[in-house]
Each structure stands twice: as structure tokens, then as C-alpha cells.
Image: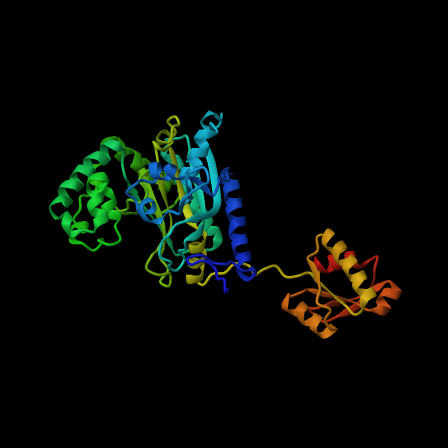
Length: 423
């Protein structure tokens, strides 16, 4: 049988994985600088967690979740997003009792959504996310956004923009909800079945519909910003002022609603503006989710966070023609010419690695010419050649692959000699 990678997934091969490692390193450095600590949650959770938090009218819950029944007849779901599991852990582990609030967390790992594969979008994708839980200060909104922008900046992206909106508090959203129902009701029969079911359950989701986004009523729909009450408007003004204070430009988009039900107040997306990126420009999205902790049985703990796709970050870098530093070169490649030399080479290889020197050797019993070609492919800075004479004389031949020079070095001095060359 011919097995292939499942549709909507990918193998990240060694020729590409080093790029992922560099992104992960950047993420860890930035999160450490901002004092966000890593949290790791299970890959699957109780299905009801996502139904209650993400929203039972969202595309994620109704169409995209990978759900299964375990042997205990419990409904489980591979996590489609990262915020609900993190907030569940926050509540379950009583992090709301920590002396230092807000609790600043970040996560990184695979998420699963059954959707049509597109460039940079997979059914299993890797998401990095940040959650700051426990503070209703608008300054933390600006901090979370600045952390995302810093990750993109350090990765090398320049063609990006921040888009903002306010979804307001419950009073503002209820007023807007009534206006949306009034607006869409007379012509709801012209919309898709999903939108028809959303009209009474959550009409805000209609604005996020991919099927009917070109319908004329979409453009003329009541704007949420027109229904923000005084406190919601004041909160949003403070978020914007903090962003301006730290020099982060933004655009306002009153139609930005995000695709998850738990968002309120600040909502944002970071988009690629590169011409070669494609039609779907969103790289990162998030917002505030006051009330989410209470929804899953915890105390009041306002929070804000976001999720960014690593696949789409790498795609955006490619669209801008940017690249990371190449996969590290090999410091030393050991070429051996017969069995005794091979044993000596293997022992030396271990000593080099213990000394912090990146080294490798041939394991295919190939001729010297083939081994030297391997050294070239690995971009080895130096090659050590060991034959019968070198074994007997307790020396090695050390060749500098940069200038072609070659010298005989004693076994006792080889490690220090290589360290000097690497300097």
C-alpha cells in the first residue's frame, strides 16, 4: 500500500525545519523579554469547552472541528485554537490566586481544523499565541499587540499593518445585535443557510460570512462603532493612545469582528501588505475576552490574547523575499580510510562534540573522494583525514576548506587547533 501524508497536513523536512527552529527561538526570546511564560496544554480537550467558548454558531464549531468519542464514551476534540485550553488551565489550576497579576502566558503547538487547504493554511497547523489574563487595563492590550509586532519585526517582516476595532461591552453589543437583526431580517432569505440560522443566535457572525460577503446588505450593515457606549468608547480610546505612545501605527476597520464568540472590546488583526502574499492577508488575530473565565466556571478574570500561524509567517517572509540565516555550517567532517582509522575517527568525533564543535563523519564505508564530496555538501569548514599512517603516528591531517591549506596536527592538539581556527 502506498501511504501518503494526510490531506491538509505536511511533512516539515530537515531542509525546512531549521527555519521553524529560528522562528521558535525568536518567539522564546521576545516572550522572555516581555516576561511571558510558556504553558503547554493537551492536544485534545472536552468538546463542550470549545462549544461553550468559541461559539456554537461559528464555522469552527459547526464545520471544522476534529471530534471523536473516546473509550469512556466522552466527546473529545483536537484543539482548533489555543485560548480556550489556556483559560481552562488558568481556572483549573487557580492561577487567578497567583500574587502577580495579570498572568502572562504563551503557547506554541499544533492546532486542527477541517477546512479547505490553501496557501499557508493547513488542517494541522502550528500556532503561537499569547494570553494575558487578570487585568482590564487597556495598556495590557497595547502590550500584547506590541509583542506580536516585535516577533514579526525580529523575524524580518516589514510589509505588515495593524488593523483595529472595538466590539464593545455586552450593553453595546446587545444594542448592535438588535440593529443587525432589524437590518438583515427583511432579506435573510437571500443569504446562506448558516447566516439564516445565525440571525437570531448571533447576527454578528453574519458579517464574518465568507459565502455572502459580497451581498449589498453587508456593506450597509450597521457599524458596531456607532453603538459603543461611553465606557466602551473611552476604553478603546485609551488602547489607541497607548499604541500611539509606543509608535505602533494602526488602521481602524469597523467591520473587523473576528471569528470567535468570546471576543469583546479590543479586536485586532495583523496583515501582510506584500503584493506577492495572496488574497488572504491575515497573519495574526486576537482580542480581549472579558467573561471567558466565568463562562467555564472560574472567577472574573478579564483577558486578552492572540494566535499567529507559523506557516503564514514563513509564507509572508517568502513573499517579501526575506530569508533567515542559513542552516549552521558543519565545523568539521572526518574522513577515514580504513578500519583502524575509522575507530580512531569515531572516538575523535565524540571528543569534538563534547568540546562543542559541530562534527560528523561517514557511515557508508565510502571511498575518500565520496567522503570529501559529503564534506562539501555539508559546508564543512575543516576536514580531518585519518589513514593508516595517521593512526600509527598519532596525528591527523587537518584541511582548511576555506583556503585549501593543510597541516599535520597531533592527536593531543587537534581540538585546540580547531577551536583556534573557528575563532
